[in-house]
Image 1 (cartoon, one colour):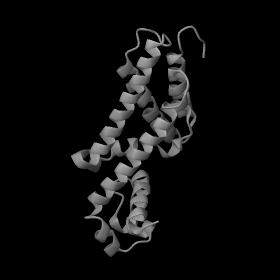
Image 2 (cartoon, one colour):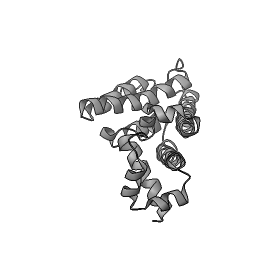
Image 3 (cartoon, helix red, strand yellow):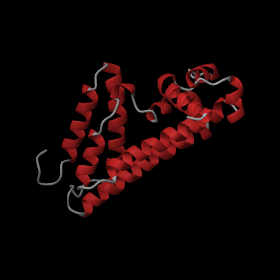
Image 4 (cartoon, one colour):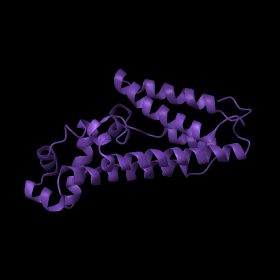
Length: 189
């Protein structure tokens, strides 16, 4: 792995674990096994490196979500697969956790990939819900953008509940509850 790649990957991990303020240039350099000169040769500074790391994390999250949401099956099956996919629940969402970081939220540039990713996810989910409505799979009263927001909120809130309790059970209960509410017309899930 090249030095810039090591720096980006180290920053991604540290942002996930410690947040922006807790991620010092020295910690990045130590984790990446790179010197200060290397870091500043490849990146203008911590904000530039953090932006590269956040963009990479956002791209990875979109790719993982699309792999599940773009798969085969009914709308309910694809949403279910997304909600039930393997996650490191107790670590939380690497993108969602960035929304809790005041330094990232205060910076339009650092916040942009986070906003774009969450907007993309809500849009993708709303499209799938609309497909389910068009196929008569879901109850006609569902509003796609509202259901999409509820799915994202369930996942993000599930992470918070799991981290607070130290157990993935709260995340799993949230997902099961939402899936029972979304159960296709005429089925019992």
